[in-house]
View 1 (spheres, rainbow, N blue to C red):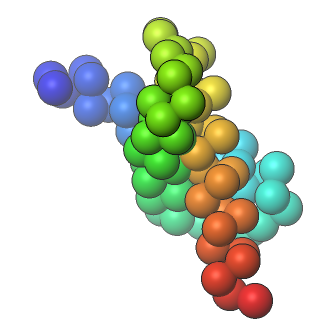
View 2 (tube, rainbow, N blue to C red):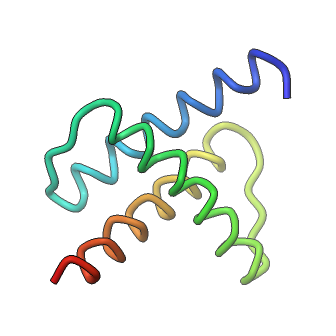
View 3 (cartoon, rainbow, N blue to C red):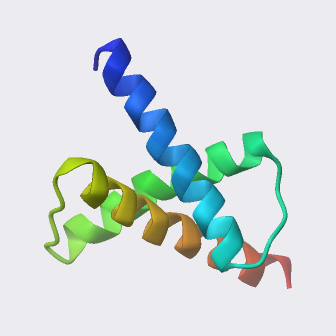
Length: 81
């Protein structure tokens, strides 16, 4: 992956983490949003591949990353109970 690809990946991760934070009514910092978004992007891509969903382009990647980040925050909230 070239530098622009990594930068795009980080932007998608940051946006996904921020949106997931708002959806789940959490309050994290910028760095945690980035981590949640990037891990969520991998989780979302994994789950999407299991059920046969493919998404292309920036918007598709963002939607999958948001779903994965929300799923990640939900799983973390279950563990913390």
